[in-house]
Length: 194
Image 1: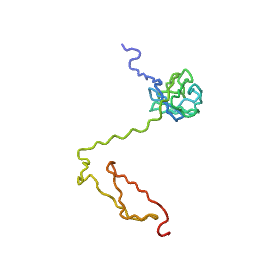
Image 2: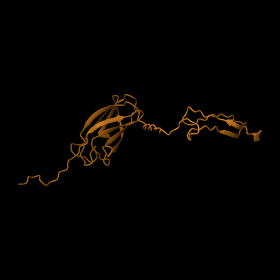
Image 3: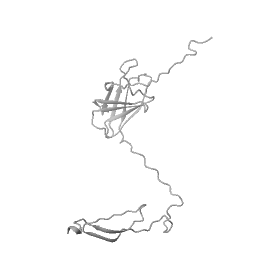
Image 4: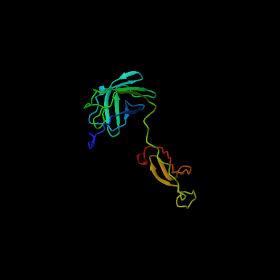
């Protein structure tokens, strides 16, 4: 005997649930994170959100949904964020059912009404530092003639303004990984202009 549901396929609805948020010093927006992919084509209206920064209400001026990133970014009219600002925010689902323009998953299931807060702790992280190169055993030994260590002292010859350069020696300082050259020349009219 077959049960009433045997052989039928059911679609599991994925209701987005708020999972975290972050805001950075110097920016006029913050980002909320969710647990499922979101519908970016039908974003919620700005009036579905309310924001307070340090207890003072501010207008939501923009809503950006990144469906694959599972984030919603709210832009606001208050001045840029500073360290230790407390951002309180809430979202109100427009109706009890699934709406066309709402905070929703890809299948159209609306997020529930929620409220939360976050504290601004720092500036936006910069790029990671490049890895430190590993020196092989065949790297610079510091010995002249090893094919790696340079003992060349450049010689410059030429004229610039009133300064005549002739066999000018510029020392290369060995304490730096690469050569450092600093040269200060006085400027003035060229010899032809005198």
